[in-house]
Length: 389
Image (cartoon, rainbow, N blue to C red; front, side):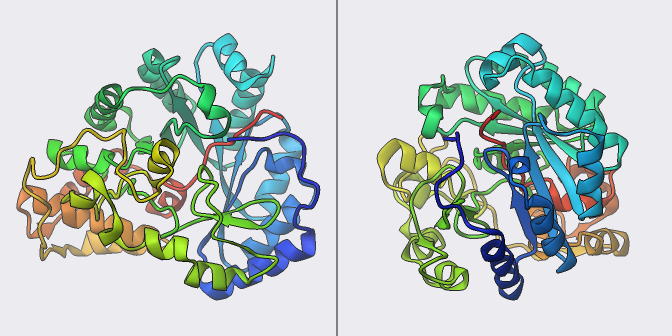
């Protein structure tokens, strides 16, 4: 993503507070505060407190430079539930070179440790590219050693400054995803999930693995971005403007934008994504399609799957034992709970199960079995920060 100095006419505090009220009325369950660097915004705690007081889950993505004991205590006091921190190499020099700061690694690791000391769940996030693909297993081990709740692997979308970075080929992406699926249970209780690579679900289904509740492109369907200037885009990596909250209400943009209507209609997907039997589970990365072709409905060029290559997920009637139902009830955010149920159903279909037991759920929710399901809410939604300003 692009980042730098603040925009000339960013949304003011009162505008943001009014937006949060509108989001609540619309049914928003989670607010993600990211950037750039959200801690540079002086009213960030006021915004977090407002959203938290209305019952939203508030999470933050930060580069960690400004995180200290005082800051973390304020995060906790204003109701922030968790923090996403990017670590792109276990080698401080490599991380610093990628992030553009001489002490970036030191600050990020310090922030991670302070957040955990104060009870905040931490998601370690890594942007995987050709330059650090060889470190994937080391990054997993590092995140687990720091008691991270989840390790989120972000696959590069070549947009903004990312146009200058070295992406993985489609073949390398698939190999990397298969490795992640194979080792999901090796780092328990830390979750391992892939982001901006929704074909993770197709591959996991093919391999009979877990994690089917994760992924799936949510751009314009379950979340969106509001820029500092008020533009609404389908996701942080797509600059297609669906509307602006200064000229329309956020509710109007969310409900009536033609961009969002397109993205919510799977019949409009083109190429292999349009023909794919997994498009309901996956949908392809809409931003990657847009970055590659200029058409956000085009096929995802990073996916190698050829439609019709295997039996599609079936309509499947499945029931849950009481312990499983109780665990599902502990997930506080409805749309996350619904994704989990959908993932469990797909897993049951793949394995011919009509009843999901605790053991089945542990396998389907690879890596999640030993954690509180109440904390699961944030695991799939943090976006990586874009700058070490």
